Amino acid sequence: MVPMLILASQSATRKALLQQAGLVFSCQPASIDERSLEEAVIAAGGDGRDVAQHLSKRKAAAVAADHPGAIVIGADQTLSLGTELLHKPADRTAAVTQLDHLRGKTHRLHAAVALVRDDVLLWSGVETAELTLRDFTAQERDDVLAREGDAILSSVGGYRLEGPSIRLFETVTGDYFTILGLPLLPLLAALRSFAPETLT
Image (cartoon, rainbow, N blue to C red; front, side, top):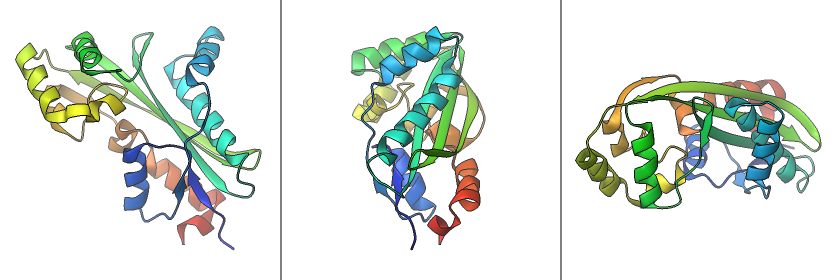
C-alpha cells in the first residue's frame, strides 16, 4: 500500500511545484509557533539557514504526529540580509518598506525541506540562493506592486520572482526552485531513496 504523502504547508507555490512534478498528496499546514522557534534558534547562535532547516523539520514532525505511517514534507524559507532576518510583509506599506530596504543590496534566500514518517526524520536538506535588487526608482517599485497585488504578501521577500517583480532584480544566483521556496530536485531524490512508492 502506498503511504499517504502530505505537504505540511498551505503555500500555493509549493503545492503547484509538487503537482507539476506529478506527485499525489494532500496538504495540511502545521500548527507551530514559528517566531518563538526562530528566536530560540537565533539565541542558540543559529542563522537564517539554521532557522529554515529547524522549522521545516518541526512542521513535518507536527503534521506527522497526526498521521501515522504518512510521509510528511515540511518546508520553510528564510531571507537573510547580512545577519538580519526579514519576514513576509503584513501589507502593501510594509512591502514598500521592505523592498526599499533591499534595494541595491544582495540578500540570501534559504529554502529547507524535510521528510518525516511518524517520529522519524528520514531526511532534511537546505539550499541557498543569492539575489541582488537593482537601484530601482519609487515609480518602478510602485508599478510592480500594483501589478503584483496581494500576491507579494505571501512571499518572504515581498516580491515574486515568477511575476512582475523580476523587473526589480539585477542578478540572481541559485536554483530557481529554491528561490520559490522548495528545493525540488533534492526533495525528489530523497523521495526516490526513502519513499520510492510515493513516486509511482
